[in-house]
Length: 181
Image (cartoon, rainbow, N blue to C red; front, side):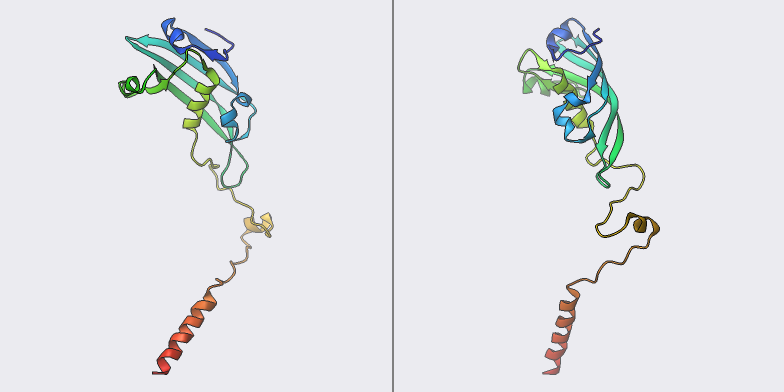
């Protein structure tokens, strides 16, 4: 077991040796995830166990931490705890991936070594919500309105529909058409 996580790993070699990787990974190192985060401070606890079950090389473990996502309503930070269960079958082809047991996701490798951060980042991206929002009702400030007005309910009604004039003209035209008969 390693306390310090390596940058590159050889998943097949680790599976043969029944290796375990346990340590912390900084969120600032995860480039693809960074665009979804409100800020990238903090770390993730990574605990991965590599093994073989017959011919199947597999990775099982967890990735835990708290992400600061951007709320899609108010654009402020929302804390999102993650506890991702990792259950991957290491394969080298689509054919092997199709033969995996149902509860395993494929990790297709074409090189001996892969970036550990890519593996962790892929699992986190799959676990993120489509639209992160606060659990309470947050609001979006409207241009030209004081946020205190929004909270007190003293918001003006929306302006009249600009097409209502056309509807009135159409009705007048229908009446004029009927009177000329």
